[in-house]
Image (cartoon, rainbow, N blue to C red; front, side, top):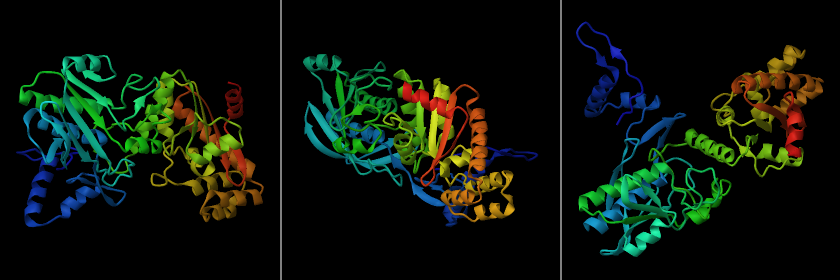
Amino acid sequence: MITRQNTRNVSHPFIAIPMWLLYTIYIYACTICGQKSLLITLEKRGVRVDNFVFKNQQKLRYGITTGTCAVIAATAAAKRLLLDIDSGTISYMTPKKISIERTVVCEEYESGSYAMYKTQKDSGDDPDVTDGVFVYAKVEMLSKKQLTEVQNSFCFEDMSYPNLFLDGGEGIGRITMDGMEQRVGQAAINSGPRAMIFEAVAEICALAKYDKPVKITIMIPDGVYLASKTFNPKLGIKGGISVLGTSGIVEPMSEKAIIDTIDLEIRMRYNRGERRLLVTPGNYGQGYAKHLLGLDVSNSLKCSNFIGETLDLAVSYGYEKLLLIGNLGKLVKLAAGIMNTHSRVADGRMEILAVHTMLAGGGTTVGEQIMACVNTEQVLDILEQNQLLDAVMKRICAQIEIYIRRRVGGQLRFGVILFSESKGLLGETVGSFDLLAEWKEE
């Protein structure tokens, strides 16, 4: 299967054939002839072929989400309970339009009462803590008494499927704080997987012509242990992990998943009434903020490399203040307007520092020395030796302020504080320490 990214028409006096159709025809011909050159070319452009994608010159395998696993297990359990079909495998077309087939195993079955199946999660080549866990689904018929209990519980309901109820069991987290899409007390099953599960089980009910109440319970027993390795405790999700996945597919090394997590945390904080954000790229920034600046970092936000996206989200949700604290090695890139600081996206650290050193009077000789450095700590030593450290850091901070002010459009008070492991405080944008003082007072 090929994901069409662009459509161009080939002009001809008589015909206009879409480029994607030509690709499809040629791929078919190449496959028959045993020629894979075009497939390789397309894959290297990021076009998915089968269940792989090329990223950063690596062929990586897609995985499936916990949501997809829950749908597959629930489908198998519903088929056994309502159609008396004991499936060994279940096929499912994900919302991303990638067909998945997974092995399922019956764990428990009582005719006319309930069925429970499990399937194993495969995260592909994505470094996911849930890779290999078993996802269980129990589908059960409800008596009138049970129906009353379910209706008075925290089960999910969907107006489109009035006889279906969904809940989380062992290993599925529970919402304990406002700001999430679920209500406090409900299971951490996101809206995408909920819709997928309801739809799949409703199809089985229709086939079986069964219109009485049915409850679906999703369980991930290992989730109790795995929750500590996720953001869930920080988000107020207790007792397990979340059932996630809008597309049904885990994309290898997905940047979107990280940004979505940052978005979720920012939205949750805003809904709780917070209007300021203390942001660090990671542990180094947190450590500096805590030990040297005396800040309480228990409620700080880690933005990883996604500084630009974090700024955008803060503005979009209506935050009033943002204080960014980080190591020079990452934040110096902001002085060139580089808002994704991953080295794969852009480096430029030495170039930025060398240019500002020369503009501060360092001359080409010092600039060349900086260009030969392998890390920013070496640069700082050179600047200190040449009595240029303060001047260069002031220039760097001034440029960072220009680019961030441009990004937030004047809709957010912000401050940026730079430090290094060896030198400590290096510099700050205008007003950063006023903002810091307010942080400590509030």
